[in-house]
Amino acid sequence: MKKYALLCVIGLLSACGFHLRGMDASQFAISEIAIEARNRYGQTAKQLQEALQKRQVEVRAGAFPTLVLVEEKQSSRALGRGGSAQTNEIELLLELDWQLLGKNRLLLSEDSLQVRRIYLQDDNNIAAGSGEQDQLEVEMRRELIEQLLLRLQALTPQTLDSWQRRAEQKQAEEEALRRQRALDAAEAQ
View 1 (cartoon, rainbow, N blue to C red):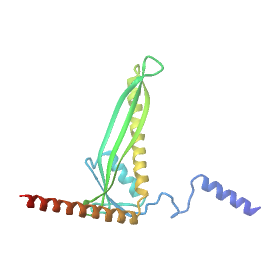
View 2 (cartoon, rainbow, N blue to C red; view 1 turned 90 degrees about the horizontal axis):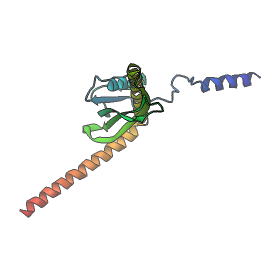
View 3 (cartoon, rainbow, N blue to C red; view 1 turned 120 degrees about the horizontal axis):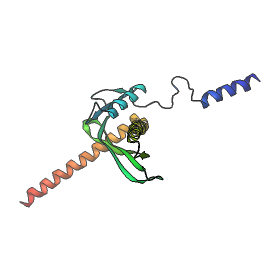
View 4 (cartoon, helix red, strand yellow; view 1 turned 180 degrees about the horizontal axis):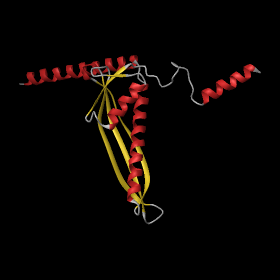
């Protein structure tokens, strides 16, 4: 009976998200990263840095790898009228283009993330619609950062080393091709 009760307690604790220290599934295999952004004091860069530090990833200049927040774009557009003639359907879109740079600033990976939301704006109550839009933008930025954290969490030192070797090999091949073209051009003259 005691074993059964203990199993039930353990099952309940794990179901509600309880875990022992060091057993966190959201741990990162990398211990440090550098972050660069056009707007390094912007909300996305600050919130990303805070989220990484909470997960024991040291954010410092010169660390390997370097995460570059290339461009963050925010847009909205009217999709059409809602069910009532006095409401508009508005689509909000938040996009983030990012790159992961290795040693010697070689490109290891790049991607784009998107978060999209649709809400109804009441023409009779513009102030409430503006507040709702602001709240949605905060939630969208949080979701965008979570998506990026999931990508970064998948990184391991072995993966980074493999990508670094591949980028160095690609750079060497491109350099050899440039030299060959220069030699061919010199011989043609």
